[in-house]
Structure formats: structure tokens, C-alpha cells
Image 1 (tube, rainbow, N blue to C red):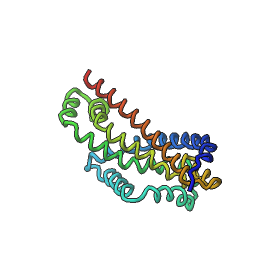
Image 2 (cartoon, one colour):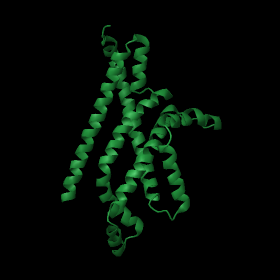
Image 3 (cartoon, rainbow, N blue to C red):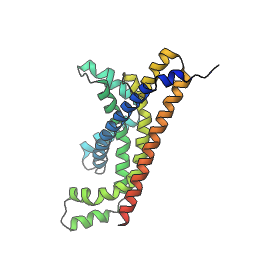
Image 4 (cartoon, one colour):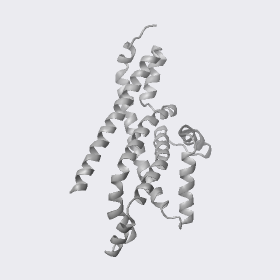
Length: 221
């Protein structure tokens, strides 16, 4: 058996192009998960709103209890039965965002609950509404506590994005499969793809560490 990275090097520009698509899909999915996770996390803080609380809790339970791949296939193959035809990229972004949002919501909820309730009471005594107290007092403090687990979720999302290749999205995984289909060099190609994911996750990790340091510096001021 011989190792030959020649076909991989020839197809490397295609892998880089696929890596760019991976980044674009992941970043867009992160935005979806951030918005969805924040909304669901805040809703789940108040069980008195039974309908919203029940819907949010059901969403979290269902999404976390079913495989991401099945959820992607529901969007891509299932929705067309109802006449809803979404582009593959949109299905990938929505699927990843909805899946990640269920985990982000728990991070948000836990971080907010960890803030001393006296902070909200103090803000209310200064004339702020509950929404203003949440936005201006509680969330800024909670965000510092959210950052490490959110970073872990972002890295997991980068790795999970490999599944969108099954929706015909031209990400790095799909480009790697195309190289394999013509060169039959599976080991070398998958090693190259793994290296690209390793670089992407490490870049994300370094960026998140930078943000944590900045937040710590600002918190001391």
C-alpha cells in the first residue's frame, strides 16, 4: 500500500473553496442559534406563561432527543411533501441553527439564573422595567458566564456542519468526496479534510479565548 497526496494537492483549491462554504454555513447557523437560543432561554425562565413555556420546553426536548441528521432530512426531504421547497443551503443553515439553538437556550437559561436576583430588584428600584433590567443589567453579566459554553457549542457546530454535505451543499466534506470519486485516495483525502476542520476549530477556539480575555479586562474596569 502506498500513500499518495498528489490528487489531494491538485484538488486543494476545491477543498479551500469548500472550507469557505463550511465557514459561511456555520456562521449563519450560529446567528440563527444565538437568536433562537436567547429567545427560548428567556421564555423558559417563566413557567407561568404556560403556552410559551410548554412550546419552548417541547422544542428543546424534541431537538435534543433526535439526531441532527434526521432533522436535516426532515427539512430537505420532508418539507417538499407540503410544497415547501427550500434551497439546500437554507436547509443546512436552519437545521444546524435549530439544533444548536436548543443547546444555546440551556446555556442562556443557566447563565441568567446564576445572576443574583438582587441585581434585577436593584434595577427595578431605579425605575427600569423588567425588560430593561434584563437587557441592561442581567444579560451583560450573564454573557460573561455564557462565553465558555457558547464557545464549546460553536466548535461543535463547525464539526456538525460536515453533515450538510449530505444535502448536496458544496462544503469541504462534499468537495473531499468528489476528489475521492475520481482519485480513489480516500485515506489521504479524509486526512486533508480532517486537517481543515482541525484548523477551523482551532481558529475559532483562539478567537473565543481572545473574547474571554477582553471580557475579563473590561469586567475589571
